[in-house]
Amino acid sequence: QRSTSLAPRPPDPLVGEWTKCKQLGRSWARRLEVLDKLNRAIDKCMAEETQDAAMEAMAALKDPKLPAWWDHECDFFLLYGVHKHGFGNYDSIRADHELLSVFATAARNAGAEAEEQFLASVKVADAGIVGGDDDGCGPLKS
Image 1 (cartoon, rainbow, N blue to C red):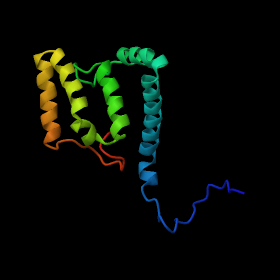
Image 2: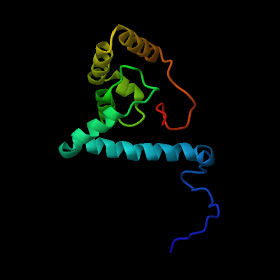
Image 3: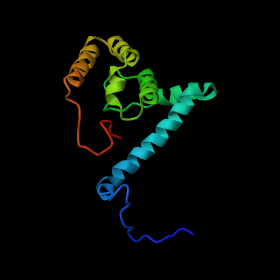
Image 4: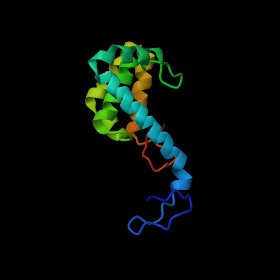
């Protein structure tokens, strides 16, 4: 029988104490929620019977934090990149020439200012000026 007690357990002999649980628990829970939503979105984008509806839903979403040139095709290819390279593998996603060309085309189609903004963001990322607080989960934040 399993114990339902919430009393603290002694540290696991192989793993030791999980010292970051209290500190990072909420961040990890948000990360799991994002991963679950991401998996469902990818399933809908990949299935022929739900692909059109998924694209329409992504087209209807517009986050003011995103660059003006970002469109639903960029959303789709970002999902594809996460599926291909894994969640949190920002450097691999950013280095993927297939994805980079989609993003560059979207920026170019939005005009010279948008293309400049995109190229500047690539230069900043290439210079390694990407980061944030370490939540123990990698560079992508949810």
